[in-house]
Amino acid sequence: MTRMIPMTALAVMLTTAAQAETLRFGYAQNATPTVEAMQTFADLVSEKTGGEVTVQFFPDGQLGGEREMVEMVQGGALDVTKVSGGLLESFAPVYGVFPMPYLFDDQDHFYAVMDDGAIMDPIYRSTADLGFLGLTYYNSGARNFYTSTTPVQSVEDLAGLKIRVLQSPTAIRMTELLGATPVAMGQAEVYTSLQQGVLDGAENNEFALTIARHAEVAKHYSYDGHTRIPDILLIGTATMDRLSEAHRTAVTEAAAESTAFHKTVWDAAVEAAATEAREQFDVQFHEPDLAPFREAVAPMYDELDEGNAAVVDQIRAAGGA
Image (cartoon, rainbow, N blue to C red; front, top):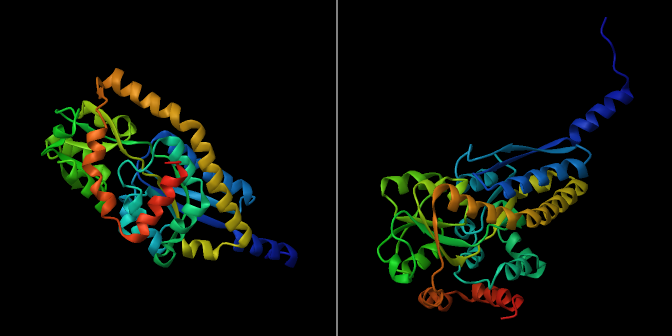
């Protein structure tokens, strides 16, 4: 005999099914603090929605590189991803301000800008017509040059070196002005390219030495601090549209709170990565004079279009410069 489900119970089941959402979240290989921040985002989304919205992760480049995952968000195959702000320049020109060299005075200036809604909200919304929005940011540290053989202790040391850079026109232009040969490629290809001599070096934060194991094939790391490019947490516009107002609020709040968490763990993790690279991989750290680096890339600011020049002015004003 078939057991009948009472109408009230059936209504509850159907309502629950209708409310349940799983956000598909893909990302590339990342340092531990950022992975923890993304998990914090997922935990908070579930908590704030009473379990009605959950997050399913596809980590460590399982679905391809960052560009591919942005395109998957655009097409609806993914709901959320986290990528470098430098990559987003090829989707929305305003993101081209972030790879500009020596844009930020220091980390405090970086945080002041990134937490300023007057600056960031228009940037986050700039890709709405492309099918995705920025939710929040994560610190990805200062990017520095590291090399397999020749230490970069001056601008002249970069001459002729093949350096992997982000797939960003601004990063390519910067590297050319510094005298090196930029090679734009995905992060997953860098280790083998360094090992085989296809690349002489790359540029990234300290975690590239340890998490990506580049310290095994690159023994010189130079603190030139040319850029501080944020990581950006993205969500599809179609995803936001299908969420209820309460769920959209929960996702937005969870994103902001995950950034606050990230700030509490980032600095100690960077220091630990540098110590590991030095003590376990014998990486040598160098501190070149930055004045010649700044001078070499100064023409880039004269080349900015009017819109991005205005954003740069906002950013510099936030630093009190």
